[in-house]
Structure formats: structure tokens, C-alpha cells
Image (cartoon, rainbow, N blue to C red; front, side, top):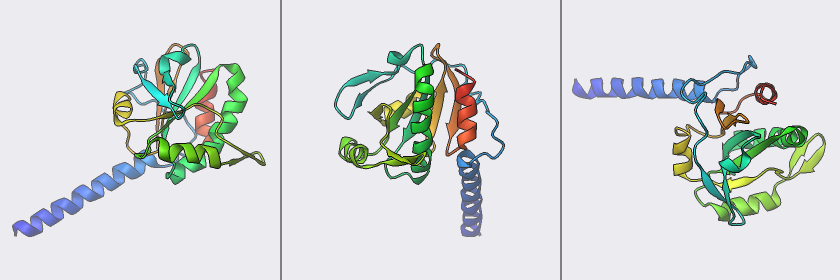
Length: 185
């Protein structure tokens, strides 16, 4: 009897976790910008990471800009869907005081990220373009400073005054991201 109860309980927990993960990473069809009350309004974390070239970059370096912090990985298929949108947004909104900051979370670090950046090109309006925004090598500590990450991509929109406006968990629609960014420009 104990084995049956344990099996039923395990299955119920797995179903619950699956439903939660599905909702957290689902593409929203509504296109509405939702605020995450756990992070909304909090100051951006004090975060300093290295570029692939070994230079130190701090989020504070971007004060005065609208910043889209994007946690991603080279092996992440939903991230590859999102990257062309981010390239286009960087091109379109960069002159208006906006930047994407990509935080690559590959366990292999530079050895996985550097070749990806050198080789990969993404279709943006009929052109094959490289990632055109800063890419930093992420750490678990960096993710923890944002309250933890449940899958990739996970992104945070930061206002010009350094406050987190919105958290995007999982792949969202291009329209939803655009509306959130435009609301801060």
C-alpha cells in the first residue's frame, strides 16, 4: 500500500511540475505585457561578468539606457528563435538608448560561446547577421542575482533608472517583447 501511495504522490508532483513549467515557458498569444511582482520595481542587481574577450562588464555601465538582459544558451532552440528578433530590436532601438545584453549560460563557457558567435548568422529581414549586442559569459551566481532562472530564454527588462520592469520566463512572442521595450523608450 505504501508503494502505491508513493507512486501516486510522485506522479501527482511530476504532473504539477510539468504544468508549472509549461505555463512558465509558453509563448503568450495575448501580447500583453505582464509584470512579475517578485522582480518588478526592484533595482537591477550589482552584476559584473566577462565578455568572450575577457573584458569586465557591469550592468551599471548601461545606466541611462533601457536594457534587455537575456539569459540564453547556444544549445537552446527557443533562444535561436528569439535571437533574430533581438538583433532587429538592437538595430531599431539602439539609437534611442536601448541595448540587449546577452548572458550566455553554457556550462562550457567561452569554449562553446566564442565559436558560436564567430560562426552563427541569423536571418533578419532577409539578411544573415551575427549577434550585434554585448554577450557576457554567465554564471549560476549571475542567475541567482536575478532571483534564479527556470529555463532559457529568460529575460529582464530594465528601465533607464536601473529598475527591473518585467521578467520574461521562456519564449514570448516578438510582439510582446516589442511592446514592453517600446513602453520604456
